[in-house]
Image 1: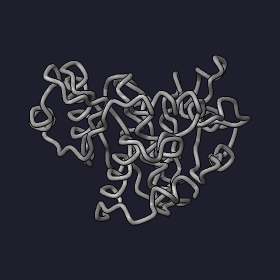
Image 2 (image 1 turned 90 degrees about the vertical axis):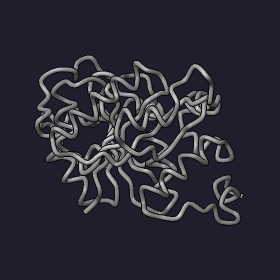
Image 3 (image 1 turned 90 degrees about the horizontal axis):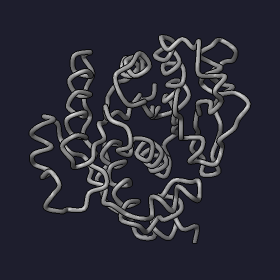
Image 4 (image 1 turned 120 degrees about the vertical axis):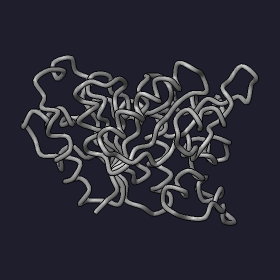
Amino acid sequence: MARIIVINSGKGGVGKTTTAINLGASLNKLNREVIIVDANLNTPNIGLQLGAPIVPITLNHVLKGKAEISEAIYEHASGTKIVPSSLSIKELTKFNTKKIPEIARELATMCDYVIIDSAAGFGDEVIAVVEAADEIIIVTNPEMPAVTDALKAVKVARSMGKEINGVIVTRHNNAKYEMPLSSIKSMLEAQIIGVIPEDKAVKEALNMRDAVCHTHPRSRVSRKYYEIACKVDGRKVVVPRGFLSRLMGN
């Protein structure tokens, strides 16, 4: 049975989707079967970022009872599998979010990891996603508003009896105006399992509609997501000889 990991934050725009995609892709590089689920039903981005913006069957169809979850799984060229949500305005209503935990458990029989990209905020769909989780990774920027919202997400998860696997701090510049990592750790009362630097490679990967760990495997961002994947998978963080060459396809 797979581990179901929810990527949450409480606030939008902090890098949840980028983290879900690149954590999933990095775990896939570690020879783990991964399914990434876009549970941001109103403003989905995973299909868009991985070059599949429009597909015949999405998570929305499954939640409406119009399809089985197995029909909504698509395989990226890298081997990573995704379950996208619909970009169509017609699919924004009348879906049953209470089915999300059941769907997640079904997906968990098909792979090693189910990575769920949660919506921002604390609405019904987010609560359903948190309910589905075995563990949660919180994503935040090193700014007070983002960390404050992340704290709300931590409290909601813990009130539901969910384990916080750790915190990932994104868009880190190591600047004086940023919250110190020690303060973020203390405020959230959770370990920081990764610090992702600000890097234009992320935006370039977005334009290329692929994971940054595929498009820019030598970047600092890709190395950091690889290290996080190793930690999540319980492996020692060591980059083997030739690893970067293999990522480049050489």
